[in-house]
Image (cartoon, rainbow, N blue to C red; front, side, top):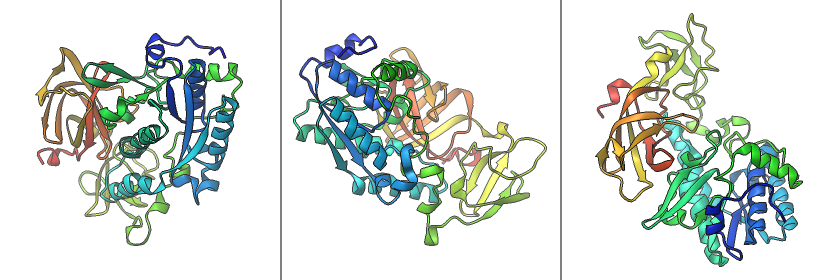
Length: 384
């Protein structure tokens, strides 16, 4: 089979003919094109689709939008059969609930906004994928993520994907380097538009399937069903920075720092969520300018390179930038300081909307240096 896009030499070097690869096949366009590319390189491919939360009782609600719905698993089976690749479903429900869903609920109950993909990739998806690769005698594991892995003398290094609009390295910074060394991302050198075009030229059924935009275990972005009993969301007051009551919120779990839409409060200027005060069950709102921060704190830091200094302003002479969410373009770092798992970042320019619970990730150009979990960023807490 002729693959309709030029295949980078870096991929050809790492994926010699006959290389045994275990591919995480979701049933979407990205993993489908990854399968076609691996087949074109004459790799010996096996496929697995993980069965986690949303495959079970919520399958009907999840529908085609979910990464592991019944429809997606059936599509993955058809794709694997077309390329004569063995396929099975891997059950990771217990590990997924313990490592992803339970911490997700706990973070929201602590008035933070978690990013479950960070924990899933670091503790469930990739460790399990590599474990299964070993069991099946596969040299490498692969997924359809838009990122790249560069192998140096000191091991694996994670790089951004070539498509700036689709790059997913942010979601992968917590994957252990020993695991990352066993992983390849076939799409890391391509842009999404070309991947879609390749899928059409390959006549893949999923060529026009929309990308999943939601958390896989939260169909329709409604997370309220995860909070029941004593942990159920409670309405409370929406207040400004002076404590003046402006309205009522429907439960703090429905809001995140930086949010503008859905507040239900009329005001002469746009209002944004500034803080979630758990003890008072209050939602604090104010102008966008009040979200600006030039100093960020994070805990639970994970280094993605082996030689990151405990403090600095550049890495290998390269300026460092920080991202506070996936779509953030990044802000210049004036200096960072590490103490154990705690990270303090001084920015050369302020950022807006740093939400506690999200990832704070450092980069040197395309190279991911590491990241942690954003802590409270309100001025009165920054010395904590």
